[in-house]
Length: 327
View 1 (tube, rainbow, N blue to C red):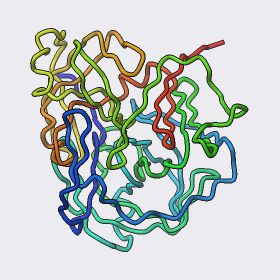
View 2: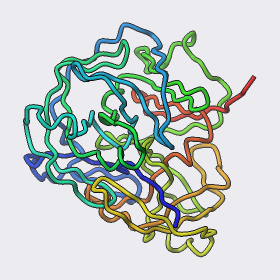
View 3: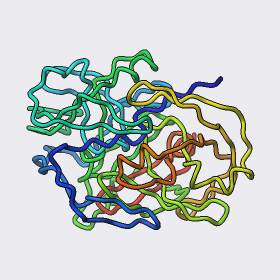
């Protein structure tokens, strides 16, 4: 049986103390509750650069960035499926506790998570003071990849920037944008564009609109998902058209296992480009939907973004992918 380690696929961390309001946001046929409820904003980061070039490492299909929390420096996973900075309880369980949390993912909830404050956090010249972070158990990730992981780098760390991930040269670019949300022309690095798509940004999660067999779906984009994921109930009408390869096992936030189908299919269109020879896991995403407050169609992970160099402009809410030219 093939085993795939899926990192916290769309970990959603939320406070017990948040009131259950009636605010809802619709994306296609997906409804998100309490989408307007957010924690207090953190101070703006100190960023004395135009383009910050950050080396990255790889642990399987995970993107690893070195960062520092107070005096402790080490490996963090770049995780657009996590909304905030998330710290591994193995190393940060003694941090001051501000509020309890629930951590939810594909395998349900992980107990014992809490919110804390970090005095100083930095990735090279990108520095934050008094940053809010969530603390939860990430030991299953460490055990699965045999690497020490201090935490996850969630989307809110980069909301003021445009980031580009070049997996072919193992580099992360963090770039400032102008008043219009654009990277200045002189700072642009890649130009041979493969695809472009606007995205929705709900509850600090990126959603890309896509089509499969002329059916429209909304996919969460998760740099820590080691493969793509499709919800069985949403895609059961076209499962017969997919090539089932074998069965797999996912290990998620609680270290629990879940059997899924592993399949191959053609004709995934995202933005202005159609991707062929796609690989995906097909499983029940109901528990993940509960973390959102509704259902989710699927996740675009490593098998999707490994196709090229990708850019996420958080300010303009635009996703681009570039062709890698090895010249």
